[in-house]
Amino acid sequence: MATYNLLRESSVHIVHNGSRYLIKTTPEVSFSQTFAEDAYEVKTLHDQTKMFQGTSITKANPANFSFAVHLTQEKDESIVKSLLTDYDTSNGEQLLKSFDLYIVTSESTFKLEGCVITEGQFNLEKTSPLTLEVSGAAQKLSRVGNASFSLPGSLVSASSTRTPTVSLLDVEIDSTNVSNLITTTLQVQNNINWTPYETLQNSLSVTNASNAMYPTTYTLGERVVSGNITQYITSNNSNTFQTFDTSANIAVKTIVNGSTFLNANLTGCMFTKRNSIAETYRQTFDFRLVNSPANLGTIITY
Image (cartoon, rainbow, N blue to C red; front, top):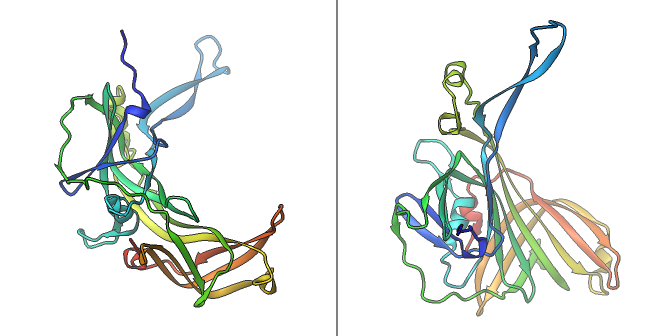
């Protein structure tokens, strides 16, 4: 009887700098990779004016992945935040930290190698657990073995408990509290460009997926920090209806047990306001950090 791969039975592991982290994700885990087709016209033997479309497959597109984690009080998920925000300067240039991602099921072990996180979103909603959703790109996806495959790296010990954070949300704009707050999101986008990796010499030797050409290097472009803040429109804040600002300081904090848990201090933001008409009127600040930040790891702390 065939053994199926079930998402609910899968475990996710990050291997970075010789250490392995078992990541407790939500059920929303996804990964895939596609191959690129090059089509060309081919003449027929009986009529040189008639063509059909031939095909050549020699390379793979970058793989992609996504998953989400709860940011617990034990902070076992801090490696995910670090991979999103921190630089790797070991080669004398500012690049994203890369890692390998392993997904283990009851039947197979899949590997995404050379991963980088290109987008992350912190979801901060009153009375709801704090979560971080990430997505990214990788060089190559492969099935490296069955469920008993020996994963590399030294396993980092996890906490014996996992305590979700139902945080007190505190948001300030130019040192003034945002009143009647509903929800806030904070997003980091790392824009990367993969270096072209196709050569004629290598393409001629491709016979199947095992020796196809896979992307290997990338360059990091701008980094964008943005988000939105939603509040009810009340007598406390209706005098700031339909406004904008091109140079505001925005502080986003979550408070757990009287102490700051997640802290983002964004200096020099623009924002615009838009209204949302429902049973209870609302307005939303859409904000963006104007400058590409030098070091996100010190601006967004956890």
